[in-house]
Length: 243
Image (cartoon, rainbow, N blue to C red; front, top):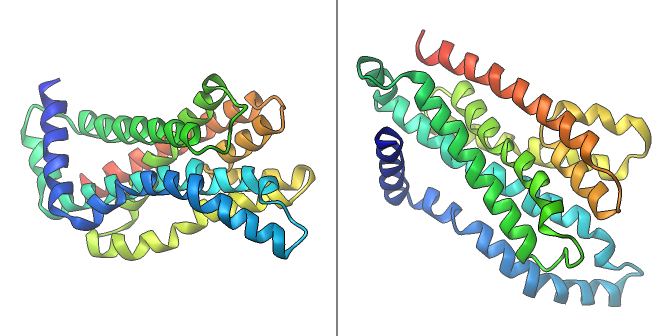
């Protein structure tokens, strides 16, 4: 526990020194404000200009801004922290301490997943766009979406050579967030091809839940696929950093 607290304390100091990482932490609260204040006004304007109700697009809005974007943001934060530590030689220094690389990675994966899941559940509840959905229905979706956070963090840390390259690559990661949304407009089994993206499964589970369907097959399939990808990324990361 002392080791984990030391890691957390170091993370807070690093985030406090980086204005960009600090600003990212306020994005979920900004999105809540926008969903409660700006989105209804935008919906009134849309309805007055076009024969379209923005309420019909609530599942798409919720999956884009809350279920997918929030885990990606926290994944980027933790991924950039890892790159910072790699640039500083901290990860290599850990090899001569009692703390194992597995403990470090467990901390990174576990904390990023839990924080992302917590914020997904919180923002979905406070968004004002899911008035008839209980927290018990939201929680499994939030937990699955939370796994997208460490996936982004490990992918960034495994692919980028340094923090500067990580910042550049993070822009390309938007495909992980926008790609699954194509499934909202595709009918039939063809949309399952998007399941190669780990972010597809929580988004699909949310759409089915909002439609009153049974999302558990997608939640379980998404859990299995996300765990497989995380295990693979952990091995790739360890091979690159500790080779």
